[in-house]
Image (spheres, rainbow, N blue to C red):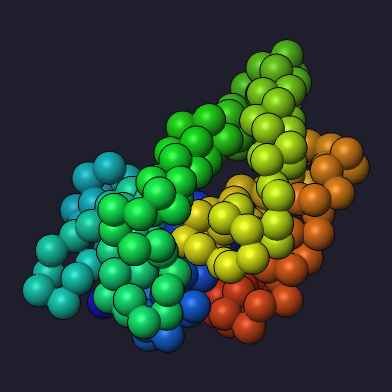
Length: 199
């Protein structure tokens, strides 16, 4: 399988999940500004959406959208227990977190990566802070579901890692800070970060 990614972008989440699952992926870096792959190809011919992540499966099919990709990867290695059993309450909790992270947190970051005016960026920072404050208040254990890592944790770690880059103050979130440090110490996370040239 081949993962189309951009270093440190939301594609880091499925990269981490693949490393946690022990799935070796072929990596293809995408320049998000030019939409060119590292081999010089036009990424929009592969993925007309034009953004990452995208996972090209063995048969050539393309799977897009981070939450779908991480669930697919987890299901390839059920023995790794990266996602709760289908039908369990925790399964739906993971879906709940993936949806919240995607629609509320991730989308709130978007204006901070644009060339918008300062007012728009300040509003976006407040929105990100509000959304992550909710996570801080509901992070009851080491990870989103308690004591065990799950696929949603990879997404949260990725989004939290953007805060310093875009000027979101993380000082009031001791649980999230400890979570990020715990995640960064995981061998699979280190591997993904190294493969993307981030450490």
